[in-house]
Image (cartoon, helix red, strand yellow):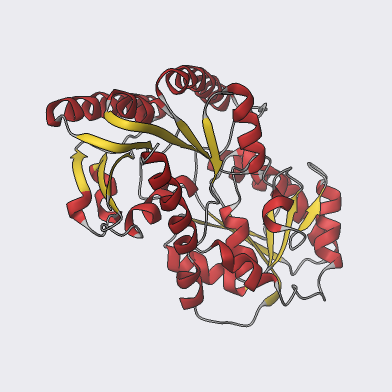
Amino acid sequence: MSIKELIVWNGMSSVQLSGGDNYTINLINLTNKDQVDQKIILPDISRQFVHDKRKILHAIKGVAPGSFLDLIKVYNARKRQAVKILREKDERFDIGLASSPFLFDTIPVAKSNSKAKGCIFFHTLPKREAKSISTAIRFLIADVERRLSFRVIEKHFDFIIAGNELVKDDLQKRFPHKKIFVSDAGIDTKALDEAKDVEKDPFSGCFVGRLVSQKGILDLVDIMKRINKAHPEFKLTIVGDGPEKQLLMDEIKKENVDSIRLLGFVSEEEKNQVLKRSKFFFFPSKEEGWGISLAEALYSEAICVCYDLPHYKGIFEDYPIYIKNNSKEEFARQIMESYHQQPSEQQKEFVGKYDYENIVKKLNLTLMRMSSG
């Protein structure tokens, strides 16, 4: 028996996909219509990622935002238009699912005619240290938005999909009467397997992620400076883009570290190729909902060194090398001590269980149970 599901996915602002975007894309594209009849509201920029266009209930037109203020305006416009479309179509759904806890997703779902309403909530916001005035403003607005969104979730939502057990525990304290369950984020193992096998370069590392300070991008400069004192031939490739790219470039120039290459935003194929040829994966991120890039690097059989975030071991066990948070000296030393090591033979097989197909099957079974009460 098929259930009817509304998904509101309003968050994309460019073709550079976030972890949450990838999760939503795979939830849409890997869901069998015989089980779940999905209807999606999304911005026009996102429709290219939906394989079966018949699933699209409405694509919201509009230009991609430029500045941060533009982004706020665009998100508000999307929110209003999504609510208007749902009111006009007046369709009933068994499940209404917000693809994020942000207001541009939660308010339309709250206003929808859905039997059970839920949202995907991969991580709560920890205390953050801003590296610039613009970042401080961004953090302040995010905090206000979060507080407002919590009110919407508290009043209108029935369940929450959490990104890990620690997020679940945190949310359960905030929403003691809500049903909360965990869904792993997942990776595309097929795409990683299709990347050409190449010999690992023992003097190469990479980082993949959004260029924001909470991902530890400034720590990368300090770490590489320490490594290059002993090993000037070691190179680091950084894949990704973000609002603090210039801050990173300024730090690289200031510290005179010429061993870091900024690739910017690249295709999934090129990103996977970088992961395949890099012996090391640097991940000094200070906040993660799950750790998709880390999982992809582990599956690509890189030696992965990361800060010891509380939820990692529950997901990845002891396959990464964990470093005390903010210990850049220890991070660099661990890379140098691992030159002649090889990753565990079980590493790839272990992480392979987080393939998106497995994740989506489990999630849909849970959503079907939710729809039946």
